[in-house]
Image (cartoon, rainbow, N blue to C red; front, side, top):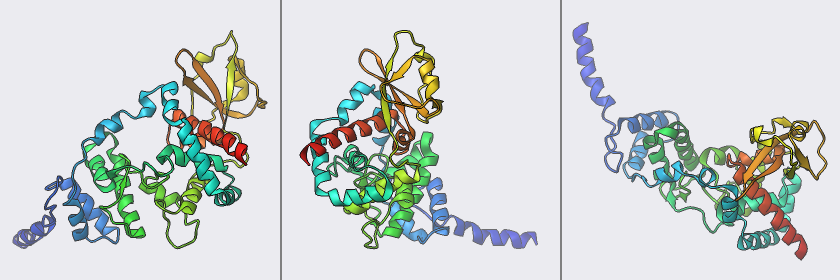
Amino acid sequence: MKKFILVLSLFVAPMASALEITGGDYQGREDVISFVQRVAENSAYSEQELVDLFSQVEKQEHLFAKLDRPAEKELDWYQYRGIFIKDKRIDLGVKFWREHKDLLAEVSAETGVPEEIIVAIIGVETFYGIYRGKDPVFDSLVTLAFDYPRRAKFFTVELEQFLLLAKEQGFDVRALRGSYAGAMGMPQFISSSYRNYAIDFDRDGQTNLFDSIPDIAGSVANYFVKHGWQRDGRVARPLDILKENSADSLEATLKPNYKWAELKQKGLVSQFAIEEETPVALVRLQQKDRPEYWAGFQNFYVITRYNHSELYAMAVYQLAKLISHEYKKET
């Protein structure tokens, strides 16, 4: 019996190790082989199809520095704001809104997400499609999944989601370009978001976040709805601060975990009516010489689900307000 098992193992072992990445920067990587085998077992990909893809990958080492130093963590608000709140971005936002006003009105009516918020997201993400990213999505995700330990789990999931997305949508895996973190299209959805939240708003049978403005606008709004957007809800309100205050003792938050009454007790004041029991987040933004305080509501938190940063959400909100102001002046 032992002899039979030994003979059998001689046949089994070569079969288990026969799969091989034959080229590229991930040649000979056992962790990549394991990933390939798992995906092949659970998807419409064959092992050979995946081996061919991985055998062409070039490691994107320049990505590591970008992920280690995102603008949202490196810059203060007064610096970050200047990146996105510019006349050209406002003007292009007004133009985009005017060109697609009927569509945006339809999306807004159906979802409850204001037109200006949809427009601002597209403006912040890709400057209305001008800057969509030049990094190869597949090579970027492979690099981050297998050579960026700090976020390997996240990017391994996104890599698998990208492969599934490409198969479902008929995308050329190696042709797609996007951000350094693998976000794609005009609204810059990562692969899992594309699969979970993108919608075929123009009903042409394909969910196209690269060229279909109806799908793009509808998908941005759907993303917000799925994350709890409140129709007709407030986003944020600026706060004043009394001379005698203890606001520094409060922890800034993204979630609306405070009651407004709690912030009032610490010396914060709103020129807008807010009921005492209203859930709010305390948003603290650093100007050059002082902190600036805002009350963030549920819809502010929803914007941070797109990018988990109060700086990002405030840039979107303020850009939206400025675009809306200019748009309404012209209509």
